[in-house]
Structures are given as C-alpha cells and as structure tokens.
Length: 352
Ligand SMILES: Nc1ncnc2c1ncn2[C@@H]1O[C@H](COP(=O)(O)OP(=O)(O)OP(=O)(O)O)[C@@H](O)[C@H]1O
Image (cartoon, rainbow, N blue to C red; front, side, top):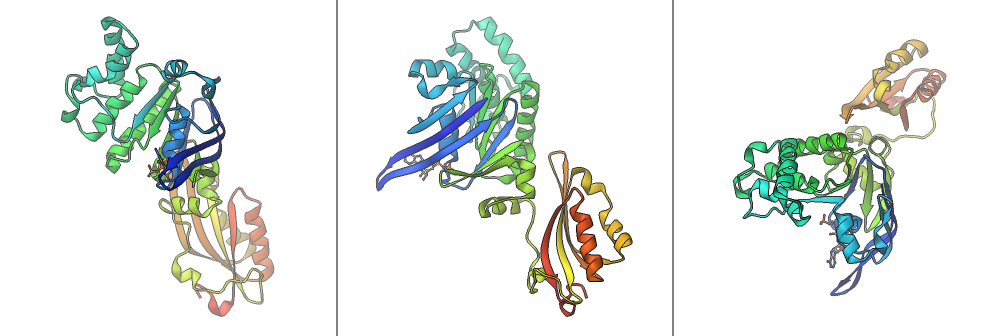
C-alpha cells in the first residue's frame, strides 16, 4: 500500500544542512497498522510527513496505493491527499466550529451538499462514540474526545491510509488505551491502513502489527512487533523494549563470572523465551523428569503482546554435565527462544 524507496530529506539549518532522513526504505502492507518508533529528533515526524508529501523528500520515491506521489504536481497532490487522512498530537481542531462542523469541514471543501454531509458525518460521529456531543465546541471536550473528533474528521473523505503523528502523546494512559482501541477498531472495520509514529513502546505493543525503529534518520531495525520484542537486534531497540519488558538480568545475577564453556561441577544459566503456544508447554517439568537435573528459576516475567503470550524465564540447570547438555539440546529442539548466559562454578552457584 505504501512504499518509500531511498528517501532522503535535508533541511537547511543555521549551522549548515541537517540530514533528517538518510536512505529510508519502508513498505507498509494494505490493512496493517505500522508503527515507527524513535527518540526525539530521530526523524519520525519528517518521515510520516513525507508519506503524504507535507514534507517533500530531497530524494527518493513515495508510492501510495500505486500512485507515485513524488512525481505529482501540487494540484494532483491535493487530490491524492484526500485518500490519506492524518491526525496530530494536538488534534488541530477548528475552535469556532462544533464537533459536527469540524468533521463536516473536509466534505464542505470537497463541495458536498448539506444533505450528503449530514448523511456522512453522523455515522462517523457514531463510529468514534461522539454522536451526543455533535453540537459542542472543542473547548468543551476532553483531550480524548478532541482526538476522536480529529479521527472522525480524518475519515470524512474515506481515506485508504490514516497517518497518526504522535496521536496519543498528549493523553493520559487510560485515554491513550481507549484511542488506540478505537484506531484498532476502525482499522478492522474499514480495512484502513494505519501508519503511526510514537516514542512509546507501549503504543507499538498495543496495536501495531509491524514496526520500524528509526535513529538519526535511518531505519535501524524493522519487522513484526513480536519479533522485535523477542529478539531486539540493536541497543536502541533493546532500550525501547526494556521500557515494557525487562530483558535485563537482575544485578544479583550479573555479579557472577560466567564462562561460555562447561567445567567440572558448573551449572548452566539460560534465558528461555516462551511465545504463544510454547508458553503452555511444561518444558521445565519435562527436563527435570527426563534428565534428572535440578532447575532453579531465578527470574521470570510473563506478558501478552496483543493476543500472544510472551514469557521470559532465567533458569539455572544443575547436575551431571552430560545431563545438562542433553537438557539444553532438548530445549533447543522446542519452539522456544534459548539464550545461553553461561556456566557458573558450583561454589558460585546462584541459588546454592
Ligand atoms: N523544518 C525544519 N528545519 C530544520 N530542521 C528541521 C526541521 N524539521 C525537523 N528538523 C530537524 O530534523 C531532525 C529530525 O526532526 P523530526 O522532527 O523529524 O524528528 P522526530 O523524531 O519527529 O522528533 P520529535 O519526537 O522530537 O518530534 C531534527 O534534527 C530536527 O531538528
């Protein structure tokens, strides 16, 4: 649905050019919710604004729904932009217009009749749960309600794509959750493709199907949300994941000297990542029974990412070296993420 190829964006700064985007390639599939996460100044706003050409890339191609926007005239762009709705952190409502009039605004610009507008706006207000507020003004609404109006307005032209520029950053956690649920709901009901930018991993975790991590104007990692949580590849991604799921070992565990190889009487520290169905398999009980080893659970964490169960366990396997090796092999043949932390000498045994 959306393809960005070789996107470069350079701003003219007072101290020289600023390369806000450097060779960004990105593909968003129809009907998915795609998140772009990055720290402040990473280039998120610039990137999302390149998708509807509010910001014109210095180089590269932007294609949306088969149309290459980078080749269009300003007039053609205005037309195409109707198919790309956008919402913002600060809602950008028109304060002297009621809820209904705000949502009607794009339809008025499109030259629709009063009857057509009434017929289209009311279902939109129903969709976002604001039918009873139609005659109120933005100043009379909460932040969450204002964002609902902005969403209804963004949907007025029946777009295929909705761009969300930090849409929940000004909202409290509970309202954030409600707005994210609404976005998920309209994504499913209307088969709307959604691209959002955020600096909060919680937003990615709650509703995104896939995610890209941006740093210094470059995409440093991208993939399915679940993969990013389970196997973050870069320090920045690990930092984002850590705000939600603690992958780090508690300090008491890292105080030990770990060896990559077994030695006499050493025990083995492992991190096991359970995902989906594998979280329900009693593998720990199985390895104790099968290999006659001791398993000490040192650290555990369980969560869900959208509907997928996701757990981390740090365990220590103790016993005969051959039995530990067999147990490790057994775990590695299951559908689990296994990370060998290292072997620790018996007199240093974590739980001994
Ligand atoms: N209009 C502009 N003129 C000059 N430099 C700009 C302009 N807009 C953005 N920049 C610079 O480009 C870089 C990327 O900015 P951008 O706003 O895209 O990042 P961001 O990830 O959205 O940050 P934030 O989360 O703080 O909004 C920054 O160094 C910023 O200072």
